Image (cartoon, rainbow, N blue to C red; front, side, top):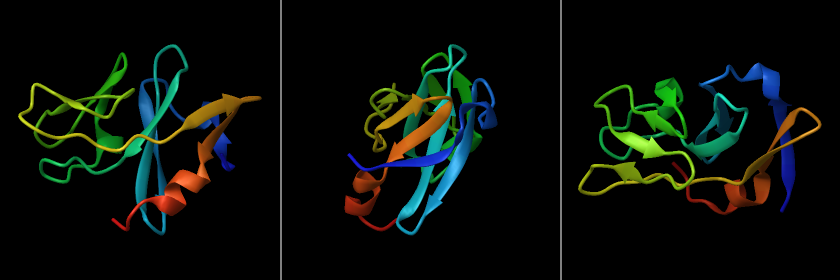
Amino acid sequence: MNWIDIGALDDIPVQGARLVKTALGCVAVFRSADDAVFALDDRCPHKGGPLSEGIVHGTHVTCPLHNWVFDLNTGLAQGADEGGVATHPVRVQGGRVLLDAARLQRRSAA
């Protein structure tokens, strides 16, 4: 994997998110109450809502537009007939959040 430093863990609010803009679309990076980090495509497949503006609860995020709930581990929507978003490898090392750049380069344009 080709890891890129996207910032300090402390730059992401607890139970919040930060947006990473790329040439191929936006990625939402989430921080849970226990400092676990997750990365998902930022666009809800239902109505295009920005997941980075959703409510983080446990290991889930609720879309701010129509309340679809996504599992931060898998990207799958819960209780929906269809839907999910891509996940991205992310880790914390030395207090810094690292995102896999190789995965971003392989994805299709948003």
